[in-house]
Image 1 (cartoon, rainbow, N blue to C red):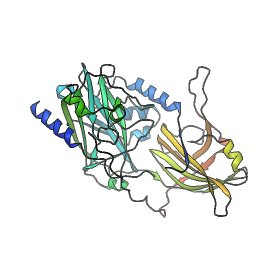
Image 2 (image 1 turned 90 degrees about the horizontal axis):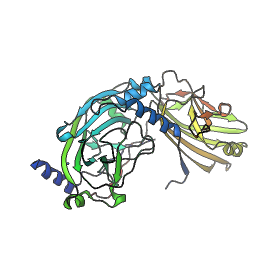
Image 3 (image 1 turned 120 degrees about the vertical axis):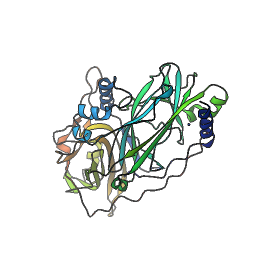
Image 4 (image 1 turned 180 degrees about the vertical axis):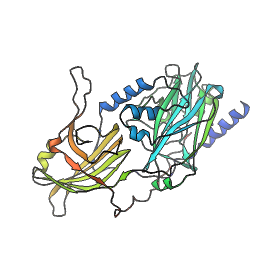
Amino acid sequence: MKRWNDPFPATPERFHLRVEATLGSLEERTMKERHIIKRTVILVAAALLTLTALAAVVGNTRLKDALNANGAGEVAELVTALHADGGSAEGFTLSLDEYFWEDDDLYMTCSVAVPPEGRYMVALYTPTLNGVALRYEARGWVSPKFYDQESPAVLLYGGEHPDHSTELLTFSVDPALRQRHDHQLRLRAVLLKCEAALPWLTDFGGLLDPPRYASLKAAGISLDALIEAGQAEIVAQRTIDAPLDTASEQTVYNDVAEHDFYIRDTRFHVDGFRLSHTGVELRLTVSGDGMEQWADGSTQLGFCTREGRELGLMLSAEDSSGRIALADGSPAYALSLNTHALIPLKDLEVVLLAPVTYPEDAQGRQLSPVYDLDRALVLTPVFNEALPAPAAPGVEEEGEKLC
């Protein structure tokens, strides 16, 4: 399970003071882990870009539109329009457009626009909820792009980069906070003009159109040094303070009706299960005489519907596996699978776990995934009130101090 931890370090004092002054005159895992990279995610993202390329920067409903366009209208109904911005003086706009919160997943879309001429950087700070920095958890093959993180990053606009962006930001929060109606969200960003071309990175498969960014630590770049050398200039800052009302109904399953399955001399025991509109998690122990043969033929596993379709709008999936010994000394495999997806649940009576392949056509284009339904486990989600609540959040140590 994901954990909600203590915040990242506070705003670096030197940069904070520099912003204020400038604006005053004008801010080891033991198991083998592998990430399942599916090109379908990239194709979906490209389709969404086509659908939403002309969307306005402020006040857009791109997340809701994307969900409706991809058959996830049930999830789209959970999305709340926020449309909060910090003004647009100097041609710099920062906005929080939409959000929804289920279980311990908080999803929101953030848009940025800069003046149409020139090359700019934006230092985006980790948003806070009720004064506490949110815990960023990537959903999809994207990277955190906040300035106040252990590996600080800045967003890049203008020049060879677009002058606007809309990104899906995903965070883990304490589910107990959903009982409140009076949450206060704060997001802050600083706009800097910088004519130097920085080495840039881009997300592998981001939804919507996330910005390009520069990793300052990897590039050995300091914003303070750039400013002192006259290579960067702080132009403006934006701060958004917006209320969030999250005390709403949600759908979370924490167990399955059956825990033991037998297929071809192989026993599958479900140790843990969780399903919501934002994904499905499973812990599984595989044992028996057919275990090795099953493992040899199951290079990848995936969740699907009874009809062999993906559960919803897929963002990413990851798994880990390792050999273990059961109490009687016999060998077994322990598997953990976690799929991040936006899933309609209303008519989803069962979830299948099956071996999956990702075929391509003659031109190398990704086709729909193919699930081996004959070797699938048919899981019936239920809510078990007897199961304990998720463990209390841990505490994350602060990373190194930023510039």
